[in-house]
Amino acid sequence: MQSKKTGLQSFMTNMAPIRAPLFNLAATLDSGQVFHWMPDGDGGFRGLIGEMPVQVRQEGDQLWVTPGTEKLATRYFALDHDLEAIYRSFPLDPTMTRALAFCHGVRIIRQPLWECLATFLTSSMKQVSHIRQMSHAIRTRFGRPLPGWSPLAAYPSPERLAQATEAELRACGLGFRAKNLLATARAVHSGKVDLEALRHKDDGVVLSELCGLPGVGPKIANCVLLFAYERLSAFPIDVWIERVLRQSYFAHKRKATAGELRDFAARSFGPCGGYAQQYLFHHARSQPRGKRQRR
DNA sequence: GGCCAGGTGGAAA
DNA sequence: TTTCCACATGGC
Image (cartoon, rainbow, N blue to C red; front, side, top):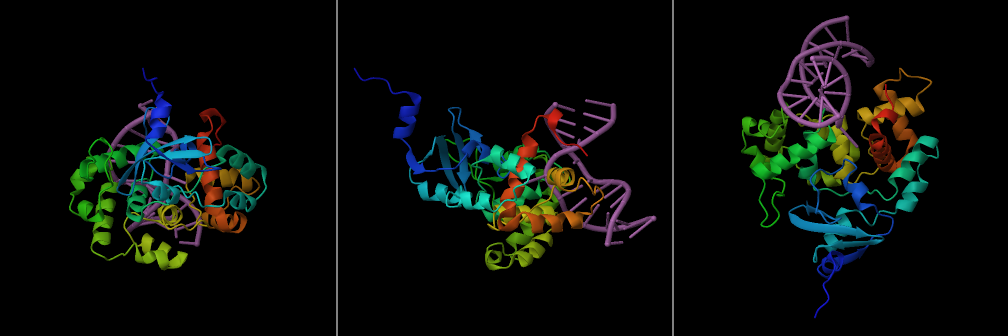
């Protein structure tokens, strides 16, 4: 009689291993960069890397992924980033030190350009859980369904969303963001803005091009710069980061302007400021409500 | 039931 | 220049 395999053993015989030292999968997926990964009910996650359905699970320094997606996953999860070197570039103040300890192993994911832009376009004045809801609604309503992966679906192309109506997008819970997503989808689909071509442009050029799209300002443009264009110095300043900066770095000058905060961040957090920003964000957001900093 | 959320854009001061 | 406000929706 054959011995019955445990769930873990059977999972691993069907999966491919990747070495992933200094990586925290769960925290990375929960840190407000991506919004569609779902728990698989067995300690792992199911999601899509671009159009490719992927199941992933972490066991210590080993990542187990759907066979055939090893290279894709390695690149997506940025396992090539030298986190030790990045950490050495951080300032050594108490706030940053606490955030680093809390976020150890969180990596900045390399996201598909359009998916990242479109998702963050819907993020304004929304909690992370709401962004997740809208992302799933848009995928389900407009995306290509994947057999056996329901309710997950690929993120719809600019072309597909360009054909949608504002009412259809509002039905996904977007509110006033529907008009902006529609107009931006049309601008990208028409070729007015070429997201791929921007990969080779300077940060400033990418920023100003993105900010020309309806509903995209400096915050969202910097998120896309960081999470999709791999510009690790990009430092998006949202309400959470602004609170952290004012509390921890401008306690002596609470009336500092937005411009002063931006200049300070660029000066103080170095060439990997985007990583520092993400760690400060995730740490602040993970504090129990009672312990959170207030204005 | 009021407050706030990974903002933006346009008007007023 | 900076400040103010409308803009939808949902969770707590």
